[in-house]
Length: 237
Image (cartoon, rainbow, N blue to C red; front, side, top):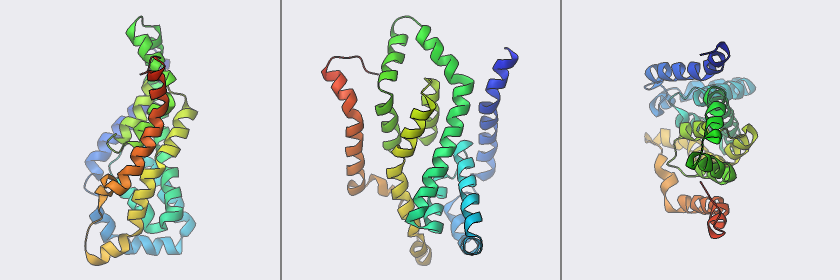
């Protein structure tokens, strides 16, 4: 392995190491109970240092996503709890998008460009699959963001492995995560009442019909270009 190749693998290797260590260290700390226990201190810090609290929150959330640490959902709830639905959703989308771009870029630098080149150079089905993915990039990326069952980490790394352009990834990430971010930020903005009642938030709300219905509608719109290609008998991924 050449020195240049090793250098390209350093970012994704560092992320993988930090992810493993972070899972061991933080899996029992970045929890709803921890948020409930520290809510008074967090509110006090926010009220005394609003701008600093915003910057610290965005940096922490970006690190959680960028290094695939546990606690992304709790971070989203915290954004709603501390800053309300708006601008909380803006901070959540900004941080989650920055973190996603970091891990996407690292994976693309270390693995994606080389793997995509091999796929394009391969004969037969592999090359046709890569070509079909390229033609359906926007639809596939939006679907991965909109469908609640696709893990966020998977949606960050898979596009890198087929060498999706960074700006395409960034646009589909920012736009695609807005529906989910709105829902969970809204849940977070109501945590004050949940804490007072000694309860826990309903994180399964995204699967309720009145929430899931509009998301399915957005998925249908994302699928439309693929459906048109099928109708025209064009190859699709």
